[in-house]
Length: 220
Ligand code: ADP
Image (cartoon, rainbow, N blue to C red; front, side):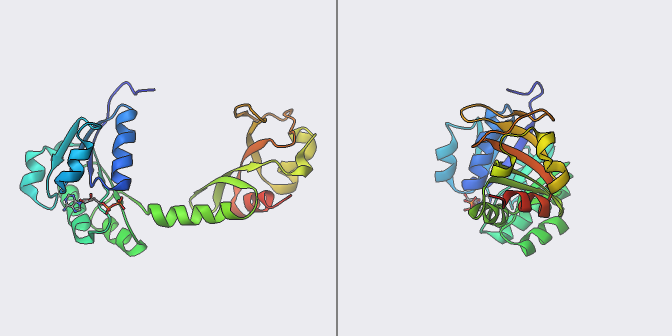
């Protein structure tokens, strides 16, 4: 569903991360200006994105010619060229762009990006590694953490929960987790209610403190 008011976003660096991000933004109705210093990469994206440009974003003249200082949102997804990533981010901060997101390749890189003015730093490889660690063992199918203590997971229902209503199986009481949604085989996720009955092979979305979500997902 496209949003009523299209958001304008400048995406700098069209590697795997920036490229996927720019395409997703366009799919969801944002107006995207995508910039990369590599003409071959820009060429590849010229059919997929409406506004593309070849420019070195460490060059203020180039940024100003492209109207970058007037964008409300910017994403710096230059990865391996750390100097360019840091310098570009600091220039965007000088322009007082209200929302600057930047991709970092390490924690230290992320700390520098925050120091030079990024409002949000993402560490995709690091974060995905942590996330997959939760999925490799146990029944978790998907996992996301919020802050340092809270998590949500998609998991297959443990045998001990099968056949009872959510109230009856006492999951909240015994495990201190909340079942948010249930999906029966071949169905779709729907909100869980106290009367929802868990069947074998159901998938659950549960939320709670990290330790509790992990403990629940380790049950057989
Ligand atoms: P990913 O891991 O997401 O593929 P990369 O670091 O490989 O990220 O890609 C970053 C992109 O940023 C590359 O396409 C590269 O050409 C581009 N880039 C690097 N330096 C600059 C710069 N100074 N100005 C604009 N784009 C740049």
